[in-house]
Length: 346
Image 1 (spheres, rainbow, N blue to C red):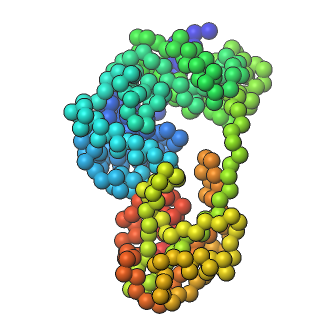
Image 2 (tube, rainbow, N blue to C red; image 1 turned 90 degrees about the horizontal axis):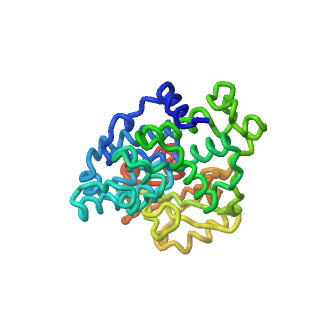
Image 3 (cartoon, one colour; image 1 turned 60 degrees about the vertical axis):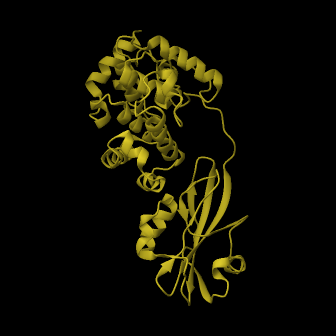
């Protein structure tokens, strides 16, 4: 079965007209690949357009403030991607004189770039014959060849990388890599693919053995943790509220949020009032507390689920260290906080 030629033929008939497919500029390809990590095209496309509009060159991205980059990234999730993107832009400008690295072995040294992204950039921009392996590739090849090696293991990655490297068209590596990614995204979809129109259905092991739903194989990961977040939304007499910046290496690093009281279980108002007494901002203040959402908002992250309540604290006095509620949308915040800001309509 000549999978390579069939994939490229399928791609020529079915590829989408996407802006990053009309360029070989490594900066634009890099932007698109980082944005599309953990993100579908339909969601990532507006962000790509915003980034290329606001930061048309790597020099523009490098000189931007991190807050500006995070704000533009808001809602896309996995914010470490944005921080790594910004850090790598500075490295390219300051250490490489603005010259984008042009081989797989040098591209992979960029912060936030792994084997897949380096392979994509090296093949698309510099015609290097290095095969991509991502979720789409795992899915397509595991089904076509009937491979049940777990994809989230070192053994699985090595097996699929070796197979992909055998299949890549060395004369047109960029076309092959984009073809197999597009095939996995549009034809060999995770759920309910239309195998009747698939060019490989007569040879596809998974289709012939009725194993479409079980391939690829992925080992179960650690149990998702539950956390209980209580955000304190202060409203002062002088039209201000308060945001704090998250520090450390946890979720939402360097993004802004309302003061947080984290508990081991769902909280009642008496427990929140007790927690408020420990906040320096509220010392010598008179205030009233009310719950905004009785039903917890469940915000699902890859490794934890956040059960969230927002508590409105109305102050009878001013809040000198606060920010005007008119400026609250200027700060980069997690989508959970952003959704609240829009629904509360400050």
